[in-house]
Length: 129
Image 1 (cartoon, rainbow, N blue to C red):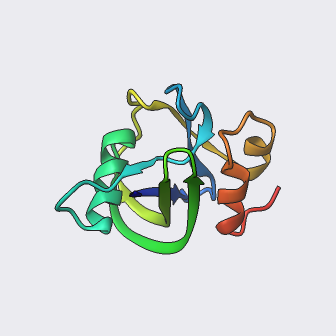
Image 2 (image 1 turned 45 degrees about the horizontal axis):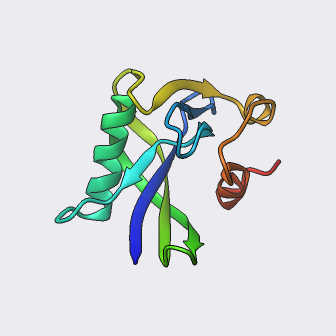
Image 3 (image 1 turned 90 degrees about the vertical axis):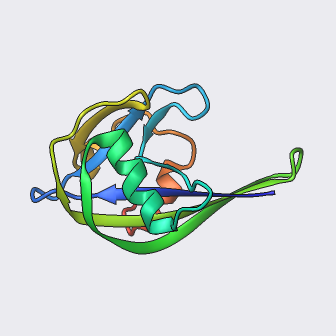
């Protein structure tokens, strides 16, 4: 089974990244906002919807950057995460049921507890630990 998901690295005018401290048990710790692609929506629509739901920001423009994948042989499930980036958005951030949001520098991110594989995901954006 293939599951399509997305994540978006959002960068503000101070060159800080919008990071979510997830409260869900399935993937706790610092992470990028994003989620699943729903049936009958495009991938770009899914990124914009997920970001609006989880951050309250309206993305004006998104850029595809890379992908990351996980495969669980026990369930025969492959998660394909399409990675996007944006520095063009409107709105003010608001926390959601997914977790607490904050703007962080890379140095600040490095000092925190990351969710599983976030360091590898950030490396695909060219941000190295």
